[in-house]
Image 1 (tube, rainbow, N blue to C red):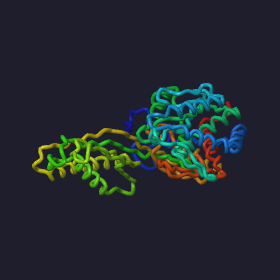
Image 2: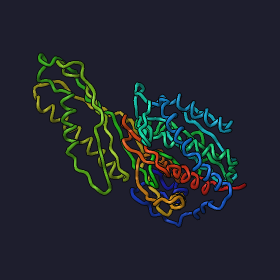
Image 3: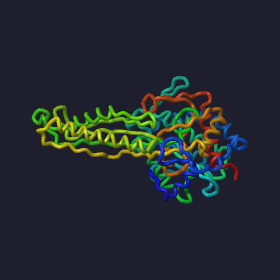
Image 4: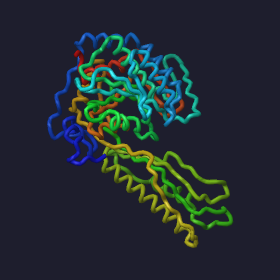
Length: 433
């Protein structure tokens, strides 16, 4: 989203150290707001930190059991209902599922201090028929989505449970969320609904934190934007023998893919592209009337993203012209149609932005060495709205995300993922009324 100087989010973005139209670390025009201190001496926070460590095995149980509840794209309801049930069992009688399918539970009072939202995403990339049963070998657990984002969901559940058990009272408000629609086809629909429909105006969110996957001390403070399309190549079609010599939509798509694959891109700013799905055809002996490909392109620099989008469209146009020129006697036309399947905004925050500084201090407090990075996560949307936002690791180790052999390894200090998150949210929301 490009924000004009008249946009009310512009001033908030500047104060938070957010750049909305430039890639890479932002340089704010003015000094960022004062960075909140970590509440490491607060007795309740210390009790909560100890409780998180003591409940490490319980957190892992939550991670495994929630992961065995299917949550394919746009069909997250079963997992959402289970997530809500667990929040209610901790004492969140106000836990609810909103109109988009997000699960929400609130602690504290709106307007009494900053509102901090912490979320894990419910959805996976896997189709409905995927077997989501996990398997375990020692400290390693395998299963679709076990890290991305069942680890994040488990951290959010742990924070919610410990907050109730220790009677944590934020000065502001903490909103615990299991959101829908983070993965590709979801196009951030969950956080989009939360931040543009549920929490606006006087009820707005001041800080957003996403816990996404396993790992230690990665702080995603810069948003990698993406353009995703289904590109359709259409023609009249015909018999492979009788109509031979007709311009072929499938062949045009093949030429387009080859041209796209040869496009050079810069290393800085980083630009990527991928044709991830192809489809079409009716039989082996039919010149298909339609062929389609799904393409993804990414960069944290909006200008670079716009440029690669234009170059890919030019490659498609050239491929169609080449296919038609190959059969000069053909009267069949080939038309091209672009259907948008996902647009994720770019954006960046300076390393001296308060939310980033708090996260870096929290990482050091639990014994981790923090590092900032860029990625495409739920934080893209709030960053684009001028809301300070980051995505953080949930502890432990993991790999193979988006594959059916995805794995998570429970390390001795995996509990530090939830401690890391706790220090961030309590610093930002404040403690003790």
